[in-house]
Amino acid sequence: MSIEIAKKLADYIVKTKDPKMRWTWGQGIMGAALDDLDRYFGTEEYLPFLKAFCDHYVKNEPTVASADTAAPGFITYAVYRRTEDPAYKALTDKVLDYIKNEPRVYKDAVNHLGNHWVGKLYPDSIWVDSLMMFSVFPARYAAETGDKDLLEVAARQPALYASCMMDEDDHLWYHSYWVKRGSHYPKRKYYWARGNGWVVSALPKILDCIGDHPDRARILEVLKMTVDAVVKRQDKSGGFNTLLGRRTYLESSSAALIADGIFHSVRMGYLGEEYLPYAEKAYAFVLSCIKVKKNGKVLMTKISGPTIPVPVVPYIGYAWVPKASNLTYGIAAFLWAAIERDKLVKEGKL
Image (cartoon, rainbow, N blue to C red):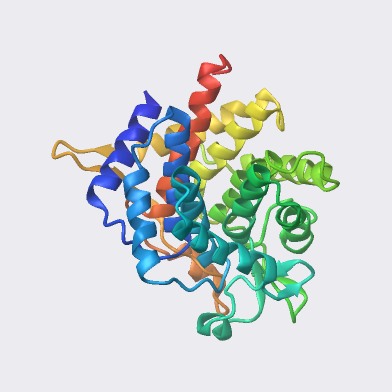
């Protein structure tokens, strides 16, 4: 029944949410998940919502100046793929131009906060979030169109990010890497759960697309090390504290991302089936956070709010972030997890 609950949530969102959403990361990956739901069921139920988003930005040209504002490329390409309307290709090309040509701040990595005014308020840095926001879309696009340059960009990101942000001993990921300082940030062993969830969810999506690229073996190694480390910090409830291994608070988006990544990785053979119990526990925790109300509302609760590696007292920047319901990126994570789990059920692995 869990895929039906995911569909109920998706249907409620497109019914109640204005498609003229902000052009940014959460909305971009939620659109990607809605498109994936359509692909999975062979429907076009969510196309009108996604098309309305694109139509708004055809009339109101968006700014693409950071990894976060590259993520809506998921939506524009999905709509172009289905309609072949050149207006949506132009929006997609704007994102692709950024991914290919934005100046790099460290090897092949871009400054996460980009080249607009927001990026000038924070040190040049690479963020773990960019594995999802900056790397998965070009991987998918390259796999479907044969763009070799974009494939290289996407395939090189995971190993580069791991070299900067994955702790050598704990195999967990820090939130960011400050380029001028030449070190990860936060400096203390604060491992943000959703950030590690981005890794676990993004890596199998990239692996699906890169074939026998030379970095494939390293990405598989990083995926296994990260998952092994993350599941050791799983709460008995199945959820994860927003700082892994520390008594902060349990939240649903990290659990959904980790469940998605493990389900996906087991299905594709990137991980063994012995990891499924961890994903099942995480998924059960997420389901406990889904509330279907008598008045028709469908809510995904306990989603930790947007989080940055604040330059001063970073612990507070994680532990005190409020939770909310139906935040876009939490919805995306749950829809992805539900799809991957349902595929395993149909294959007889669950």
